[in-house]
Image (tube, rainbow, N blue to C red):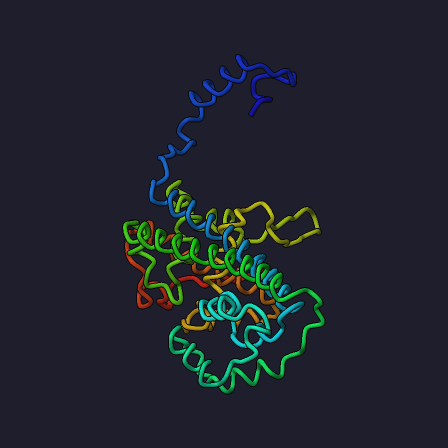
Length: 317
């Protein structure tokens, strides 16, 4: 807007103040009044982002624990599906080295599994067979030092797992009190954490009075089209909220496994030759229109209403 007041590129605080005031005087009717974002929305956003950071930390710590065990105690990595699960951490507390598990029998292992409420469906004999047939470590480090290292790493993993559980409990508590939760809680395959991410990252945008098309652009679900003369290109939108795009992408990809409308929209886009990421963005754009309608009308999501045949179906890239 600066060229309206002159061709010079000169800039000063006093001139900027005058330009902003004059712009408000002449074009104020074109500007939207912004209301502060809901406090609970900001709280969900902060909690969800911290949880994402802790999940990334957990991944790093878990990988470090796995690498440590592969070097000194490979059998322990073959027993349970997730090395950061409670049963796996409890096993490493009790048997941090191959020497500690040397006298382990099927009966003793069965008793251990019962004490820790194991639900993996394997017997002590089966798990012990995995342990005995695993590769032997070539480590020359003493069992005492391996015990110290394993216990230290297990303690870090357990601490981060407990921190994530604590955050998820806080997220659920804040989510239950949020006015948007009732609108979106019936969405297919949207769990507590993903719903909190959607409300925390996308929730502030409808409050600014955006249209569904503007919302899709800000979340990164709409492509960027450039046309000049005979040149026409459609590309990926980089200028968008990455956290909002990730939250909606996760939900849209999950929804197609449980919702017939989402599955049909996904399959038709794939049949047109779209790649999986493009197809999920198309599906996400469709869900955004539904979420926008829910927040605009104050109506909770209902498949019978929001998937009616007369509603437009998103197409394109």
